[in-house]
Image (cartoon, rainbow over the protein chains, first blue to last red):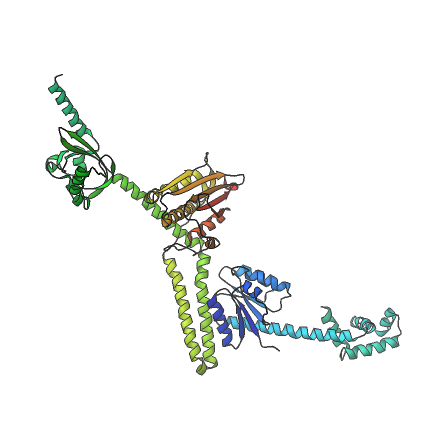
Length: 201
Length: 375
């Protein structure tokens, strides 16, 4: 798994620098942008694990950049950094899917705690995505007929009903069934049901 | 009536004139010797005619006029070059008790039987000056109020200005602590630089507090029914002194009928004060000899606009974007809050404050207040 990299977007140089140093004191690497516009116009960007995003900035502001990132399927969790009167803005950002927010000035350890939680979230998401991708590959390795059988198995139908609904013999269903279990690397019916459900969600 | 009687009659009339005059009348000869000193002059200066007669007029003047007066009279005799003779202006007088006071002095000249005489007529301006000072005091109070209200309007901005360095300080301190806990031996050089940064950010916060020191706690204000023409007239009173001092021509074009608005009178005054003050400053700074400021109230279908235009140097292109931002100023002693607070006030009234180049080449600021505000 890649080394975590925190992306800091804040127009206040002192705060950027302090955040970078604080993360560094925890062994976390970061990359800084002096505005949302600077982030947007940067060409090749290193892959970030999470983003610390200031709400108020000249040009594109924090919530606006967040909307843009969301359109790109939000590649990482975003933690908003909010000033005095911006809590309502931060709350509405959370409702729209931001990971968390931090009110300035931060309490000791608070920032590190939240950033670490965001990194964990990112890694879990990554892992889940990886698993789903693997599952999908297994599904793709089944023939269309096997996929039909798998779907009905996941619905809990017995062989006889599957045979009836697909118009094939129960013996044939049994053969497909064995192939499905093998190709999906499922050691039990409940395991297969779980796999199908997680792919459907 | 005989000729002798006629002369006596004229003499009596002349005495009556001197005695009854409300203004001080002093007659001197060509070298400044006091010949006549009427009752009003006695009251004004505190000398009796007997005391002062035969003395020189210059003892009624403070320095530097006193030291220059002989030379002035003899130069006039020689060259005919005059500064006050034949006209009048505001000068400072010196009373017997040593007090100085403002007075308007006009000097006329006459030659009878080859003797040159100067007649000075004096009006004491002490009362006028007192009322001018009252106006100035009012102006100061209003400017003071400006500062007070600013605080209330800008709490969020001010809090932000202080919160930023505090946030950095807290984060630096947190980082330093972690570094020491992790590896005390390696942290030394890092800690050194962190401490320097913390100090720097404390100075940044202190500078904000320093700026705020100029301002003081504010009182409360409220909305009511007010005639916009009257609000502006009241405001203009406060600028009489300043406008005169800067030699600026200020014209006011009110609405033809009273324009009743439901506004906070003080707040609207504050906007106008700020705008006019800015115009005066702009004109003065540019040193334009014939400064003009026009204040125009207009009624449109959906709003009332109050525009303040000047023929100053205008606003430079690169500053226009920041014009209404807090703490943005081009004035050497400015705090940079005036226009930002004006815009806030306009917004609080459901209106707007905008900038455009004026037709006279300077700036035009237009305050628009929506007509629903009119009761």
